[in-house]
Each structure stands twice: as C-alpha cells, then as structure tokens.
Length: 398
Image (cartoon, rainbow, N blue to C red; front, side, top):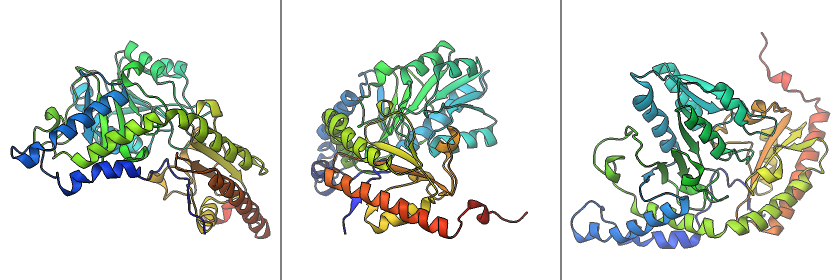
C-alpha cells in the first residue's frame, strides 16, 4: 500500500540534511552552552552560526531579539500573557483584538485572560474568503486596545492576511501587533522588520525542522515580561538550558526552506492546483479562498454529504494522511471553526478536508491521492444515501 503524507500543516518530516547537521550536538558536542568547560564552549560557534541564519532568514535586525522557545504555542502564550502584565495591568488599556480564525493556542490563552484576569477580548471578523479587512480593524480598534493579534497565514485554509496593513492600523492607535507566523515561515517570504510587526511566533517542525523548538521575534526596544524564570539565558528573556541541536536544526531548516521558496511557489503550487482541480470535479465540492492569496501548499475543501471522520478513515486505509482541520483541535471532528467563521457549511454532513503538501511530495502521489479522494467521496455518499444519513440523529433528545 502506498503511504502519502498530506498533512504538512500539522507537522513535517525533518529534512534528512537537517538531521545530519544536528547529530553531532546530540552525540558528541552535548555540553551546556553556559558551562565554562570545553564541552560547553564547543557549542558556541554552532549557536552563533545558527542565530545568524535565523536573523537573516526572518528579516530581523541585529538590534531585534529572536528568542528560542519550545514551540509557537509557548511563544504565543508568552506574548499574550506578557502583554497583560506590561500593557494592561494597572494601566488604562484593557482589551486585545484577535481574528476570528486564530489557532487554538491564541484562542485558549485569550479565554484564560478574559475569564481569569478580566481582559476584554474582541474578535475581528473574517470575510467570505477567510481573511480580514483592514477597514474592520479600523472600526473596532480603540485607545483601550493593548494588542492586535492576527495570524500571517491560516493553518486550515492557507489564506494569507494583510499583516503589514493591519500592523500599521494597530500602531496608529497606540497598540502593539503580534502575528502567529507559524504557517507562513518556510512557505512564503517573510520579513518581520519590513512587515512592521512587534512580535512574531513560529515553530521549526512546520518547515522540516525538528519538533520541540521554535522562536519569538521581539522588535528592538520592546519590553515583554518573561513567562519562564530561573536563569539568565537568552539575555535574561527566557530561562532554560539551550537546546543546541534543536537550534542548529531549526536554523538550517529555515535556510533550506528559504532557498526552496521558488520551488514551493512553482512546483508545489502546481501540484496543489492539480489536486484541487481534481477534487473540484466531485459534485457539491468547494474550496475556501482564492488560490492567489493562499500559501502554495494548502487546500481546504468542503465536501457535501460526507462525514469528516469517515472520510479520514477511508483515506487512512488507502495510505493517505490528511485532516479535517487544525491538528490541535482534531478531537472536534464534527465541526470546523474556520468554516463557521466564514459562513460556510460545516457540519457532520459537510467534510472540511484539509490537504497540505510539502516539497517532498511527488506528482505520482498527487495523482493517487486525487483518485482515492474521489473514490471515497462517491462511496461514502452512497452509504449516506442508503441509510438516509442526517446529522440530526446524533443530537440528544431534549
């Protein structure tokens, strides 16, 4: 049986060359960078080289901070909770604005701030294409807004948001701006300085780097109360022994991803469009968002008359890994917050199927996947028709 991985927005395989570069720092050069002996000192050149790659690859100035974290979720929580202490607690500002389609890491952190600390969280609506309008932010923002938080690219639809314009509006009203750039880094060109953002979060495992390492960009001169205490690592901003192998791997993965951006935007985009065209031949199927404004690898298809879990099970039996949306919310297979936010149908009889490619996918894999998706949709619709399927039978009696 073929094995085809089309869930790269959830995580990616580590690039073999990245793993090879990491191995010495797992096996031989394993010292704590803060130790004074030769084992610790031996890590310094690799760390310096890696940080230079990260600053260059992200468009950060030497005066900015790129702080190593464990993942984007940590980075996101750090910004949102740090803003509470720095910009809301004991000050006149009391609100944070987030888009209606943020990752659960943003939503859950804001729910905590709202329920436990009294922060007012306002939701910036998304339009029918799954992105935000700058004019909507202008109408919503006020002098009480401490932070605007909008993702750079959506993890489910792949839609790209107007980050530079949104950040400008935030600054015009005295608010800071954070973007979750997790799904943008490595897929499109990002330049944090040029975009004008104050904070940006990302994770290595989304662009063929290792799991368990990510980063937070902090613009020059900005204060951010630390989330972790216990040492003076990373200039005193984040305590914890540095993950040397992870940092080396993340930096190399970013370098390679940036080198492959033209390939991503041509070859991978072509394969994505080919798969999308085949899926759209299925009756009652639509895809969220125009292709030109999506990252090159992502499809979110609404398939009417097919239950999501059944579709995933069928594809899994055929050796195809896909998802119904965010891997961090995959337990809720019966609904899709993205589809709901943009006003599209998404219930038990409307699968929101996410397919996300990488540079390691091949044309033959895409051909096979298209064939299997069409066959699964036909088979599951036949079953649904036979048993007069309706999501209402799952509802509890009142």
